[in-house]
Image (cartoon, rainbow, N blue to C red; front, side, top):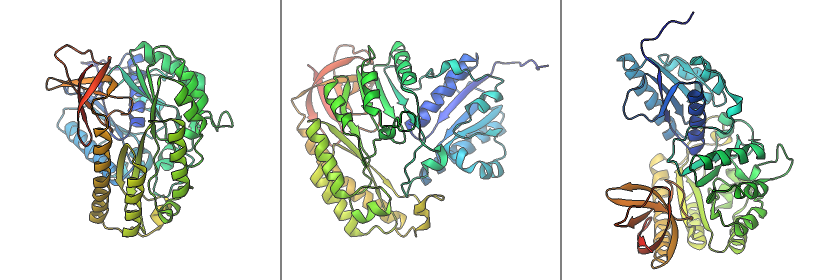
Length: 435
């Protein structure tokens, strides 16, 4: 017999780490909501009594943030502000046994694929008919869409396969249904995410099917922008670019992490591609989709990296002129093959190298942005802050890329598309007026 509660439970979900974690939190929220349980994301009102921390375990900084967040929530529980604290996500998947010993005040820890077990804590049932349904934590007009789980790559620096397992694609019809559901909720832009987009379909269709998926999603009425994130450069399926060029609602944007440009480093990182092959690929991409925006990520301080390797990376950036660049300093992760190497670049030196590389990119970004002045772009309105509207062009993804500051005396509905004439350009942002 269940005991009667004096108040109704309200669950707050705190999401740390990447957009893939965000989607997991949204799915959990959707399941809880379908079971008639009150749920919110990142609750500012503090009127909840249960917390689920969805952790990140990717690199050292992310792990520290996750642990600090857990400790903060445990402290609130000790002070009587919370009834329950649950922990899920990558950190919990990887270090569950350690965490149970170190922070026993947490009511339960769950791995990345244990959604039904989390629901059991709330006496809730996993509803399989809700596949693709979720409660969005993003603004209504855009959403992330995870097309696969896990990764089969064996990059020396990456612990993702340890936490997320092997690559598993979602069936195409499921993803199309999910996209249709998102559009009904008001979503106009979806960002396709995975640990590795280009592997999509290899497991269930026995061939790379990203291009076919893009075509099917492109046919979903009401979907105005489709954006590609995390496409591995080795054996990149060039047919993806043909679809991108042919379909108006697929953004001319590609996030393709190269990580380094020194062949010595690429080999040590087990990236299965050379600098020369990377350069050939970049040339082919730009030939197939003229004007495409290329985003990449880089790593500094991998074991054995020298100043010569850093200079080679700078020269590569200067030559290739990527539109967007993100940079990580190497994190020595146990269980990876890189962990067997001596972590021989001091933390301060890793940071110095990252800063030096970003200074090169900052200049490139400024020059590329200057070329946009007096041109008109289609912009999606994301939000209003301090009396100004902030939006993005098709060449910019959420949070990681440029924003367009729009000066307008008229009201601009959030999520609408407008044409903006660029009047000023900075290192990473643009300003403009309604055209």
